[in-house]
Image 1: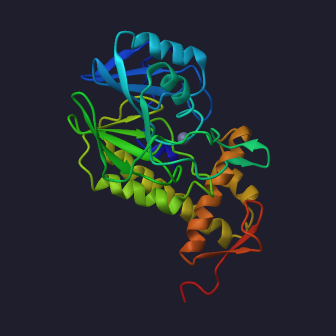
Image 2: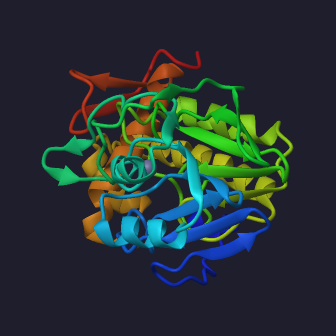
Length: 305
Ligand SMILES: [Zn+2]
């Protein structure tokens, strides 16, 4: 249950104010709060004088203006993007126009995220194409800092985390959030990849995480372990639903998320759908007819014999 995940919702900030949050690390929060972004997008600035910006943020003039004003007299050399959701990458265009900095990322967005007209997460930015395509293990260096790229597909297929090597600090985008679980919405969101990308973090030596939404995660591995356990518990709940003749996602969501506001049910349905795909890939469940969030699902009666 979500209650067992060690979330931290203690987040001290002021919109539009650039704040030094660690040596070499500053953050400014955009005023784009939503049920997907919590208080809004945290844009990070790395270095001093010649700086990198991680996730310039949404296409919001107030945010771009505040970011550029705070960097007046400095030189932006790199724009690093974790992934192409609209709360992360669109401001690259305006910041690049103002600074001439090159953009870095894994690649363009995989696919669309709108399910039957209901917004289930921050939408995709299909316009963003990085000037420099990054792969897992690449290192990007600037003035006094270097970043190791960690490909972490799951939330999106093109999601990258960046480790500031000088501080063993991982800028983890939306892969891990301190305040909430991450939305995994098929087809671009993929729970099998997501679990593998969480396991990948357990094998790494990162001292702390800076997520895009919310405060620093100072003791990351217990949180990552709890997030993995949480997903596996959800899978178990879905097995129980199927065993108890609850075959449709629309009927599973109210059982599995009794306290979730109705407005969030479509997003939860996408997460349940992603977990059903995981069970299908494991040979534990089947989808009757076309694979769709509205389909009828069942346990695979041939499994476990
Ligand atoms: Zn995202």
